[in-house]
Image (tube, rainbow, N blue to C red; front, side, top):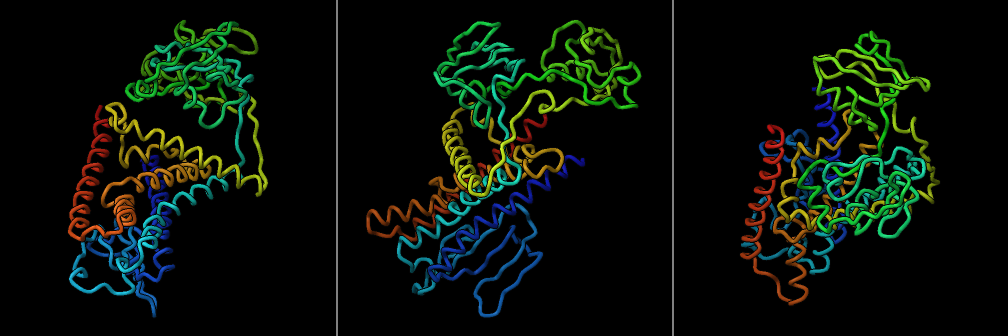
Length: 439
């Protein structure tokens, strides 16, 4: 329950930041062009608000709604999700959205997307400035990689060390490395001392999405970091520094396999093969009903030497921009999979988004996820779907090209259709979450 609350709190806080910045983008350009803004709300205020305030000499009511799922900036003279169309019966007023030139209306609608993208760049720059970045030289990964079953079907093998991707040598593992392998045509690996070429299927990404089992991870040996006094491992004299190499006689070079094997024997006894100070031992011990033996795993950076790179302010800004641009390119590239059977099955709602946050509060991970969600929100909003910013932008571009405004009736019907599409998408995404929860 505590983990759920921590993840939920992170999701709500991230959404609050993203929605506030998004709507601030619309508000900024609306006020820049002297367009009246009736309301600026964080969260939805259907049925009431937690807080509302209207400054003197201001036409805008600011507030916080009770439903923490979004927010809005109600721009006077614009057809939006409120479907307030009474003003259409009156002559346009100078301060209304519909009275402004097309290029100004275009910038007002682009404001939210632009601010979300700028926020992501600022966050990424702040992350590398405050915490730096990590880089793992590939020649230090002595145990190689662990591959999922779908990756092994494509020709990869556990213990492979990746040397080159599409002819480009790999000198370090960094952000985007796994994606580059999945999307490659051929990958050169070091396998049992020999160089081998793996020809990656053209539909590898679809296979990974369909299997929903990941692709690869750094193969990390199970080295015990600490032993809990109340656990069965303590009673059976396991010690910090012991390396578990096999379970019930089956070799397991990767810690995730060891963890899975131990959990599968919950309430039973298992034989662990361990290496202690160069000596091989076998210890039989019981596993509790929760699938645990009372030990913690030594972290990755205590097993492999990871380079921690520090940045000055003037180095962090271009590094953050590069990371943000790379993330956006990757996300846009992945959008095509949403329209495939495999990709559609992976669409998730609030449950999926919440699960992406860490189980304990970790500021670097929180801000990294917030930056990613900011880019996702920007890209999703620019899609040419009525009711989204992209739908409004599409109609304004049509007006600029044809030099004729799209009729108000068309805009109203498009808004209704767009809202219906969005409601169906939200229901579908959260329905996928429910199906996964009961599988």
